[in-house]
Image 1: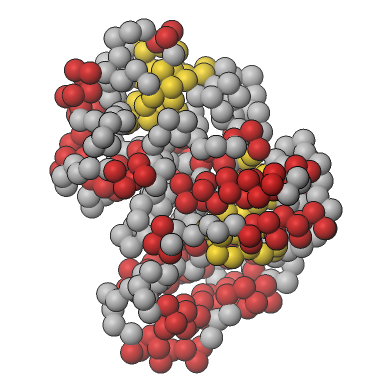
Image 2: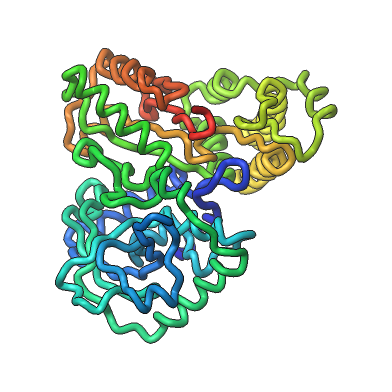
Length: 410
């Protein structure tokens, strides 16, 4: 994994047990620079990290059976030049259970197997050569990934053994629920891909479901002028969340600075009593049944964060020290009360890029103020959306933030 991004250690998963993996906004600028080198690149090396079987049991194929049956339809792959910037290597990932490794595998892209790859099948751990119908240099679309050749690799069996050791150490159960929620299916990138630019292919199943529904609503209202949808920030780790807070408030990425933080997160020092009487280990988060108390606890958490941000504004703390302190606050409240500062931290939020620069970047028409408001209204109409709001209207950081509804909220 690239050193620049060795802080990435989260992954897709159920919100009650772990944070979903998507490293997003804090690496966006650097990623754009890195993606430029792919403009003329047509072939990519990849490692096969998952061999799902589409059958009645919807189970994850074991290494032994994979070697016996191969897989001729599609596999999960880790593109060596691309995914290292977004996803940890599942064979190297430290995790408490096999489910967490499985979730990480399911976050990797799906590649179809072309006839060019031969008829001997693909095994877990194989090194392969892939092509895209539209490569990452095409506004980062990454569409039509397919395997065209199996490469000779001396470490394929060792990699498969290492990965399967992690999968079987905690038991390898059925994954029907994950498949039902969009983990893998034929055409697993989701529908409507021609109507999206940006990071749609990296969105969690929950967010994809909302985005697909948004496009359906847009088309039903004959408003193709709003397409394509430019998908921006998705999953954000707790440390990435801390970086965003510091940059928005201390460094002024949000023009209102602390005013923006107060309006968005409503920090409240008087809520300390709710923390004092809360039971550590109780779920006060989105799904714990005590959300009213949880919201008050969250506002006190944000008050503690505000104090750290104020130190930065007063030049009494460095960025590294401030981000580390804020991350520790977020981590403690997540571990103790299952509270996170944003649905981005659960892979259940998306920022749709709406400003002029972002629209021109994907060679799409620039939105008028009315079009932005219409897009917000259509998002709010989706049964899979719990909240939609345009942030930083007519400023450089402008975007439409939407929270998507999880399966537990239906």
